[in-house]
Length: 113
Length: 114
Image (cartoon, rainbow over all chains, first blue to last red):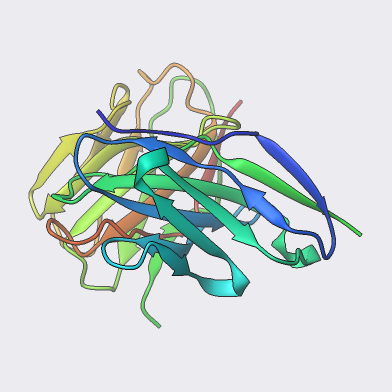
């Protein structure tokens, strides 16, 4: 069975500092991996995804993530936090022969001015 | 613009009443999903449908029902059998089996039981 863990339910960073949100997954087959962002009382929006190929993937709003198979990780980073980055972030995994997507519990990011 | 429309955005219900949440998409996607979101628990799958007139239970289907009579529409009924229905409900769609799993979400419906 697939599962996703996100270390830290809440992360605070200063404006301009590095953002690092951690995600680890378990999957019996090569996974597809995703990061979604959710602003208050809204739906989720895709930030970036890994399917095949290059393990470092770039997304919207300056975010990127690196797929590390040996560590079963897909951590999300951004070099410099902006106030508008404050939101809930969800890591998700699906199987290559897709039938459903499994979400992690989410990490709430706060950006301190 | 293509997208997913959920309605109503806010809904209040008395205990013992059934309510239906609407989800419509004009993305021509084959697959549609309903998720429930509670604080600190991420998204949990209620039901999903990969084709018209067919749907499968997700992880927390008890107390919910769905229908898929049209490709564009996937309404969710929260029945009186759902013991704790207060939550944020999200509808999503994807291009269907064989895709990479990317989901497109609506804006959500917040249900409060009084």
